[in-house]
Picture 1 (cartoon, protein in one colour):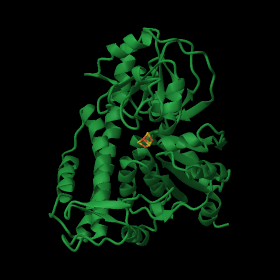
Picture 2 (tube, protein in one colour; picture 1 turned 60 degrees about the vertical axis):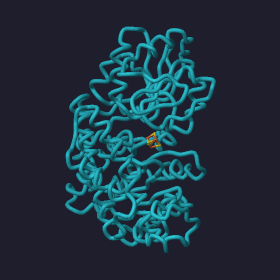
Picture 3 (tube, protein in one colour; picture 1 turned 90 degrees about the vertical axis):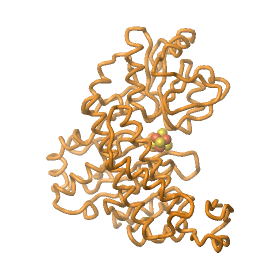
Picture 4 (cartoon, helix red, strand yellow; picture 1 turned 180 degrees about the vertical axis):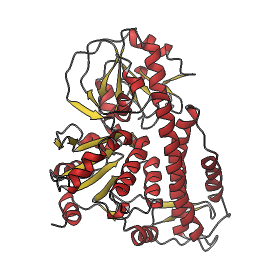
Length: 430
Ligand code: SF4
């Protein structure tokens, strides 16, 4: 990786930086600054969603300023201070995830598990991608009774779990998978599309005129919705051919931590009876690089007496498989989009309380795929909580130097994924 040094105004290439004799900044500090910047971007995403719902947190806002200020030119060369800032970033991310979770629950109710159709229904349709539930909610209100079916795409899937969304009968299902398939899927979707946040891709010409952006998103040449007035999108969908009736598999989502904690007695009994041997949190962003089928293979190889908790769009590689259940506890528990990682954290903390031990002593393993900035912020939250032995992949983030990775390995036993066989054997001990 080549790194631009804001101090020297030069680019360092490879592992041996030769330019910092000018400003004195080490490559490891540059790496921690980048980690902090990516973490702050993740926090900003959560804070933005929360603010749209009327929720703010002064401590988080103050940290945004402190963190960003710390990364500007010639202000801080103290490696230890950056290590603490990176961990504080994890703490603030936990805080802002809680803020957003509470704002969602206040506005849309507590999610509960729900089966979602993945086919299409006959009639005009709009598919909504991204993560912004408020955009989807406003669109549903404006399309109610107009004969238009609304589909969630990818990370919008968890909307189906919220009581306020379930009231809309024209929210008919989930279409498509993770973001890297978007161009193909949108190309094949005869209706219109709305992009609310990342991960929107530059569209093909074949559907550019049917794509709309709203809020934080923008694509040159694509119509942008102002003030959540979706009239132009409704006009467009009227001119488009109807979708065909096409059945699909059902997928289950909506395992908010409150719903999982409702199963706590059953879960504890099953663990004590030896019916549940281990929990695997297999989650994170998906991506297009080779090596990401590791996560699907891993999920498929998880023994039948283990439960998989999942979050974010990496799950689309395995969430249509039938994992069955153990004593009425589903073996695949989808807590939601990357904005719902808070639920996964709360489940882990609740398990540690129930079994009267630390998270690291639980029969729980984290196998995470990273891609974008919220994934970085979530990883920092897990470090802040002291979680050890996390496996990440498919490759280490390019902005992490071998020196910083070494520190993380030493402090948190952070590991890179290898193969599903080897990693499962290492975790299960046989
Ligand atoms: S989980 Fe990550 S990669 Fe997937 S849509 Fe959300 S932000 Fe993008």
